[in-house]
Length: 182
Ligand SMILES: [Ca+2]
Ligand SMILES: [Ca+2]
Image (cartoon, rainbow, N blue to C red):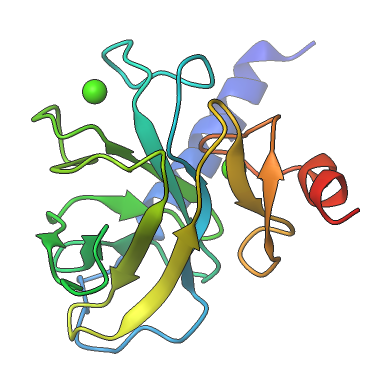
């Protein structure tokens, strides 16, 4: 065993990774289609997953299919397609490259990732738009079953399917797609 060597190697790796970000927030370049998508959504949540305050609020999971972390500052979300720029997202809300980010639709002031509206379990829309107003993704859903999400499988590209084994903030499972697609 070489614990000292191991920890040294770790710290070198971490340093290399941490220094590789280097992004200057170049939000001038328009985002390509399909890079930022709605990956999973739960309009009625009682036991699936809790926000950092222990509250089982409605949530939306975004997925970043790209190779660069995305800062959602200036992006828009809405639960009303007639108001595509209803809510502007704050800077510092990051969706990691090839990673997921949960937004809590709880109409509460609890941090960057909490939206000023809730989702309607009886059905409505949710959409996300780029800072220039271009719609990036949207979903229209009907009446929701409590604690059942609608999830894309595979992540980012698959069709939405009802998912009783939701995965907030993590990769969607094949069981969801299989369960709903017959
Ligand atoms: Ca909350
Ligand atoms: Ca998921």
